[in-house]
Amino acid sequence: MEAVSLSNRLQTVADMVTGRRVADIGCDHGFVSIYLVQAGKADHVLAADVRPGPLSRAQQHIKEVQLTPYIETRLSDGLAGVTPEDRIDTVILAGMGGRLMRRILGELDRLPVQELVLQPQSEWEELRAFLYEQTYLIVEENMVLEEGKYYPVLRAVRKETAAKEQIAFIEACEKLPAEKRQVMHAFGPYLMQEKNEQLVSYIQKEQQKFAKILETIEQHQSSSDEAVSRKKMLDLAAAMLDLA
Image (cartoon, rainbow, N blue to C red; front, side, top):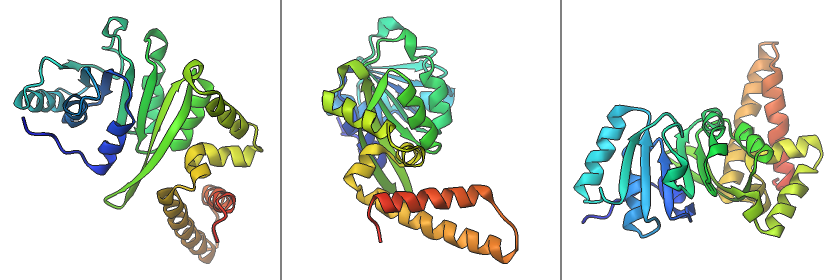
């Protein structure tokens, strides 16, 4: 049986999984699901996708590596096709926008899910802010640079299962002044605390980009509140990270 190889982004996602029964929502080609079983990280995976085409490809890949007894495929719009009887420990959402993730995660109340592994493509701030309001607490973060794009990956668990120091850290972040709290939501409390190398690179590049945007706007004697606000937040993040 040939072992599946994952991209750096998807490997980071898979590495964060600790549950034994996993739902890979938006499974696409099914490689993460296959990897989790091959690596012995999961006993059972529910590979679900809303699109018949990708789900069919996932089914073919799963069949090729002879893992159909361990990986179940299901056509599902988000978590709609997942039931409490599936006894899912971990839900993976990767490769979709944070806003879509928020909609999908709104269905979690009826499921006994203990862990979320999330890799948003966009709307990072919205997703983190949403999680802070829910029964889940972010406990781990990483950031990956792949093909010129930056991808945050985070793991969240039910608050009652989080360690006391994790709860205290997030609560302290939430008590920061509004502007600094917004920075934490936008760029990730653990990534900020650890001065993650990829996050530092991302912020510096974004600062340069928005400085040029504002320069161009000024040259055309126009204005953009959104660009000014973004640059201000980037500058504050850089200051909090002690960047020159």
